[in-house]
Image (cartoon, rainbow, N blue to C red; front, side, top):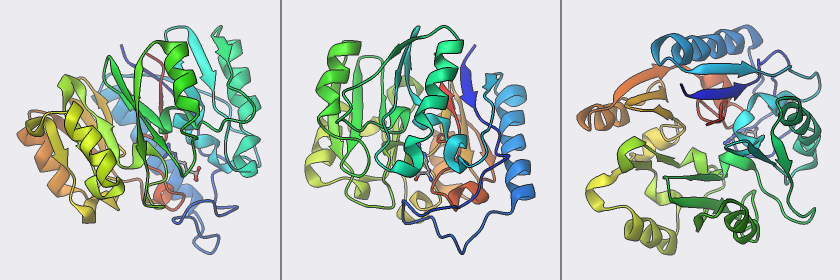
Length: 266
Ligand code: ARG
């Protein structure tokens, strides 16, 4: 069974602005956010059959809901993130405590290296891809590669709206890749093309990329995807995936959607 760490949105709001989506003036409708989050949980648990681990929300840490940024979990080891912005650095201790309480062997990077967890490191069984420049440091990847014994292909994120790799890049089961080509420079696009054959690359149209079409959760052949992305949904269905659209626009006000709200634990 696929298991995910999540954090209920009790204190989710827009308290600061650290990406182009966040506007303090564009506040969160809390009741609506809670409803959308609960629907996401219901879809994950009941439609997709995933297991959910809920951590305790903390007042004053509005982005703790985005557990994809807690760190990276591989087997029983958890490498805790080091956030670029002080606003989110305060989350590190809470994620670390959760990992310790669950009995993970907790690893950390050098104090000088920023790394924002599964939000910036995604991949297939052997080859991982690391997004850098906006949040994580490229210098974190050689160290991560050494720790986890995987090849990591660095991909520069060139569009500030797609500041974490999981906002524009989504590896799917069976080796397919859903991605937004314009979020990468020509070097990154070539690196992707070299690793993923053309017939396995599903390019998301720009107008759905900005609706977080790539911020999807893939579990086997099931894909939980933000609502209002009909072209992407069709691309996936034509490839044999079964899609589960969920409305998550309250979370997009903070620059996140389905994938950001979950951390894969296995
Ligand atoms: N407001 C959060 C931030 O800017 C959103 C994080 C979204 N998480 C993700 N994995 N893309 O850090």
